[in-house]
Image (cartoon, rainbow, N blue to C red; front, side, top):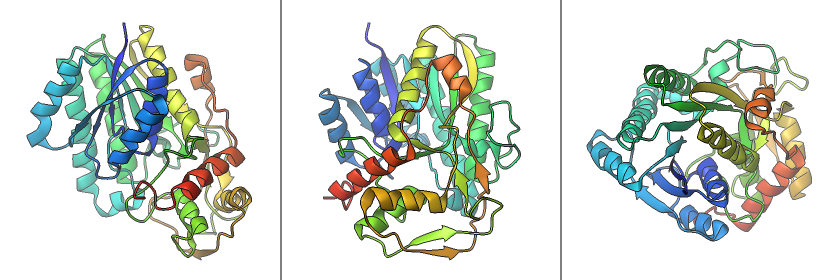
Length: 343
């Protein structure tokens, strides 16, 4: 019997790639997305790449007035489980607007839990984040590391993890995989789907790409006085297609009857600095990437990268694509879609 999966935020950057991989695995998909930071065109391109249709509900999971309609639609879809990606995701914005982040991200998760309960679906793969670790651990960080996010965005991820664990403790029919992933970059090799933020990019790679394609004059490097090899922040960048396949592997794990909740890192196990990432993108694009060094951002930490051995052990998953492949695919997307989906 074909498994039917709800993907919240399925039209977004990570969500679109997850949907393509889920469809390729033979599953049916219902996208729930409010399109506040995503694009309707992404849905058409998902279907184009998968050569299959998806169902789509335009709705805001955090809006109490829409909750009953969302719950009913997920129930009538006949959901077997969900991949939960919907939510606000900018670190700096979360520092400035903490109440909005708590209300939106936690509210969306609670609505989804209610909807899955109504549908008698008990499998959830949650889009968590390495930000739950804060700066409390030595690298590479394991899942047994201390948690303590340094910003409200990260705390919403940590709180939702705990909510899902409590749900699984209360009912042993639930299976939860909290995927703590590091820094997704790159794009589908076709160049048809990729990262297209509505406003000024909050993450490094889309900003670099927009500088390379001529949409922005220069990159802002937030701090060059960290205790790292070149003074700039070091992160574990992971190709978004590798990441998407990690979600499918997590669903496979839960579909085999695993219950309870697990926390699992998805990363490559190697960190690259901001300046190393800029150099790699210059190689891929053959374009100059001018930059200015500006003050550090609130909530940022110096360095973090993953120990991803647990994902290999539980899911049989590991990242395959290196930094050069990430840059080449990200550049292909940006070059072929210089204005994103708004062509």
